[in-house]
Amino acid sequence: DGGITQSPKYLFRKEGQNVTLSCEQNLNHDAMYWYRQDPGQGLRLIYYSQIVNDFQKGDIAEGYSVSREKKESFPLTVTSAQKNPTAFYLCASSMRRETVNYGYTFGSGTRLTVV
Amino acid sequence: GENVEQHPSTLSVQEGDSAVIKCTYSDSASNYFPWYKQELGKRPQLIIDIRSNVGEKKDQRIAVTLNKTAKHFSLHITETQPEDSAVYFCAAIPWRGNTPLVFGKGTRLSVIA
Image (cartoon, rainbow over all chains, first blue to last red; front, side, top):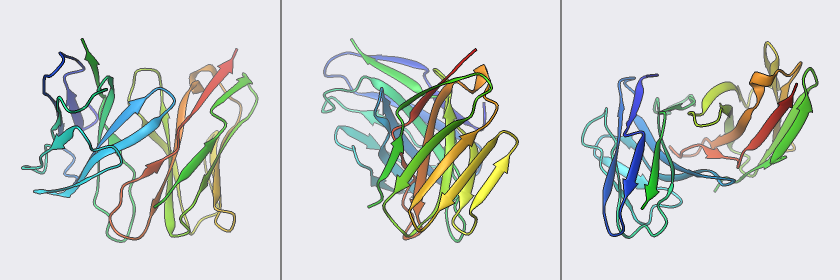
């Protein structure tokens, strides 16, 4: 589905529970990103990774964690420390910039709801 | 760091009219400016992009213009159709380092038939 797959499509989290959102790409892209989307807030960067075994915090990293053990995978864990996790989460990937910038390919998103 | 402002936040046009969405950026080192379209409940998709060595780029009914001096760029959609209704995001990326795209907050375009 466009080379980048997010699962599940819908996820429900109970108070105090950690949940993990999956993101897998087969585009051979080096860089991967996690964005959070709330109504009227646009796309806010949570974490990003330019290469395997390396990642950086974005603008709203508190309460989230990631790993990048494989080039194809960049899972996002929403921890209990994230007090308002209800949102639409988008994963994206791109070729790594050297001398030319490239646009992102987005996954279809995961809608997380706290119950 | 880079900051991208996008206006307007909502835009309604009659079918067949043109729509213009404007963005400004703060970092003069930014050199790549993509536009994304997001239909309701779906993923953002790249519709057009422009690099800093080009002033204008067209793709059928869509065009993007860039004014590096003023640090703003605009999306122009001509002969709008109902299927153009969506949220549009602009973005910019600075050349320095491997930093991610910085997005505007989006414009919700409604094309009224």
